[in-house]
Image (cartoon, rainbow, N blue to C red; front, side, top):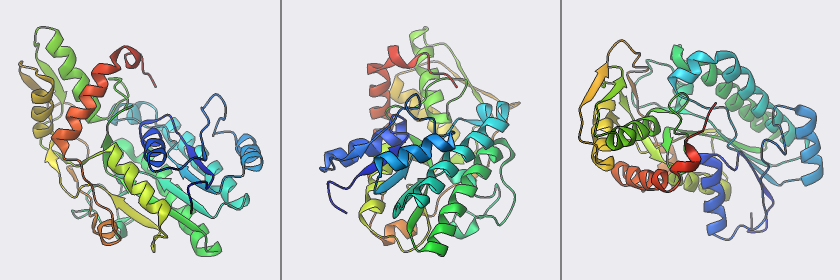
Length: 316
């Protein structure tokens, strides 16, 4: 691996892909490839195969996916299942057939069973049933993990899967119909603040516990995987620390300066009670997070304020 290695970042304009691009550029990688969805529809297998034939990347980083929170997963189960499988299968199979030796597949902690022991270890994969509110996305991502594992096992290629915890940061999706919990909260508190500090109603009880990782830290984990041959096929990426949703809300309220009340709608689902990642395997091979949650939320809110005009219309 050197700084002129040709690297294709699928999903380079998304939150994760753009962070990976910035991280690689900052340390001198100068042969990066990115295609917008208008330029290359990753759901189109012939188009993806033609892309591989033309560009011949040496490394592929798959940060492309159809993503969303509980509401989006519940409303669009078929799209979350099928489109994610189309995207990743075309990228993985196309890379294998094109002779790509290194592939980094990015997934999500939702691949693990709903009631798996905490913290979540990589070996808990497929040991029990999934969380129903996001099982469609999870099943798709599990097939991607297994496809990379199969290629690694059968053809001895360096195909590895990184499973991050809940990510947040610059270029996140702040649309209230399709976003994840942290950016949705951040926008709600901001809008309530500018609306005379009106009350904020949030889903669920506030008792579930969640782990959050700043996306720039995730990008550093990808760089680590890129520059090293990881000995196993699956690694958790996170902080190894979690907080309740109530604590998260209170932290975001402080960061945004909102002074109204927080109300909880217990009729709405909580999702998985707890999802804490065991990140010991990544730590053992030399990577761990560096951005604490409150600092990361401050950075994310600053980016939100600087880009608010361009993110108001983000939709599914």
